[in-house]
Image 1 (cartoon, each protein chain N blue to C red):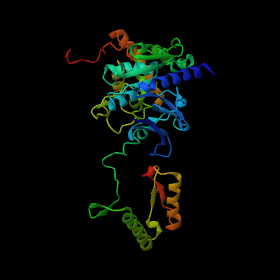
Image 2 (image 1 turned 135 degrees about the vertical axis):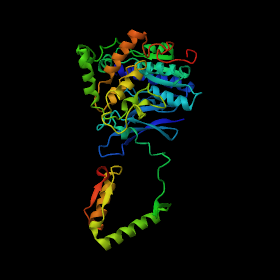
Image 3 (image 1 turned 45 degrees about the vertical axis):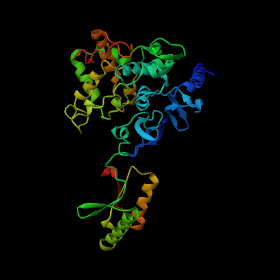
Image 4 (image 1 turned 90 degrees about the vertical axis):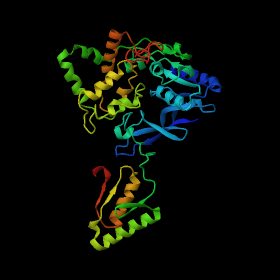
Amino acid sequence: MTRKDEILEAIRAHIAEKLPELDGVIGLRRTQEGTAPYLFRQGDDLSELALEPRYPLAPIVSLLQRHYPEARFGIVARGCDIRALVEMAKRNQVNPDRLYILGVACTAEEAEECHCSEPAPAQMNQFSGKAFGEPVPGASPHPLVAEYEKIPREERWAFWQKQFAKCIKCYGCRNICPECFCEACALEDPLWVEPGVLAPPFPMFHLIRALHMATRCVLCRQCELTCPAHIPLTVLYELMRQDVKELLGYEPGADLEAAPPLSLTLAEV
Amino acid sequence: MEYKNVLTVCPYCGAGCGLYIQVLDGKIVGVLPAKEHPVSRGKLCIKGWNATAFVNHPDRLKKPLIREGDRFREASWDEALGLVADKLLQIRDTYGPQAIGFLCSAKCTNEENYLLQKLARSLFKTNNIDHCARL
C-alpha cells in the first residue's frame, strides 16, 4: 500500500466514524464511469471515495447548505478548497459553523503541478475537523509570473491582448470559480460585455473578472484548468493578489476573520 | 437528501464533450465538466456549460403543436405524426422526391441519425439529408 493509499484509507475510516453525526460528507466518488463530486451518506460504499482529479467542492457546500440550512456536512478538502470556503464564508455563501473538514495535504508532486504556494490544509484550524497527510512546503509560482515581470511595462498590454484574443467566451472560468457567485453577473450585462462578439472585446471581459477576483482569488487554478483556450488566468490573478497584499495588506483565503478590503458593510457606509 | 453527478455527453454538437449533470434530490442544479473525459478533458464551450438550460425552461415544448393559420394547436403524438406522414407522401407524390429534405440533429445518437437518412434515401428516394449544425 502506497502512502497515498494509506491516507485515503484513513480518511475513509474517519468518514465512517463521523457519518452517524453528520448529514453527509462531500467528496469525490470514483465509479466505473468516472470521478465526480458526491454527497456520501450513511450506508454508502466508502471504498468509492477518491481524492483526484480536483473539482471545486466549496460551491457544493454552498448549494447544499442553501437547501438544508440546518444540516451539518463534512467535506474532504484540500488547501485550496478550504481557502475557498474561507472567502465564501465571509460573503455569507457558506456557514462555517455547520461544517466538518477532513483536510488533505497535497503531495509535493501535486503542489509542483499546481504551482501551489500553499499545498497544506493550513486554514483548517479555523474550522472543526481533522487533517490527513504530511504537509509539504509550497512550490514556486507559475514560471510565467517571473517571465512576465521581465516584459517591459509598455509591452504588457499587448501580452494580455494576445492571450485574451484566444477567448471563446465559454464563461467556464466564471462558472467553475468557487468565488463567482453573484446573482447578477457583470459579464452578462450588455452594458459591459457586448453580446455575440468573439473574442470578447479587450479588455472589459477579462479585466472585470480580474478586478472582481482581486480580493477573492484563492489560486485554486480551476479557471485555468477548465479554459479551453489555455489562457494563463492564474498568472493574472497571482499578480493581482501580489498587488492586493502589498497595497491593502489582504490575502484572500488566509483568515476567516479578516474583512475583505473591497467589501463595505452598511455600518461603514 | 441526495447529491450526485450523472455523466452524459453534451447534446449540442458532434464533438461529444463529456459533462456531469449535478443532481440534488432528483432535480438538475448545474453542470460540471468531466475532467477525466478523453474527448473534452475537463473543458466545455458555452453550449456545454448550458446543456441543461432547456430541461426545465418554461418555453420548452412538451406536446406536439400543429399550425392552423397563424396559430398553433396542441395535438397528440399520433395525430401530429399522422399529419406529417400524410403531408410528406402527398408532397412526394405531387412534386417528386427532390421536393423533400430532411434535417437530422447533433442532439440525436448516431443510430437515430442513421434511421433518418434511411427513411430519406430508401423510403422517400431523396439524398436531401443534412444536419442541424449547417442550418
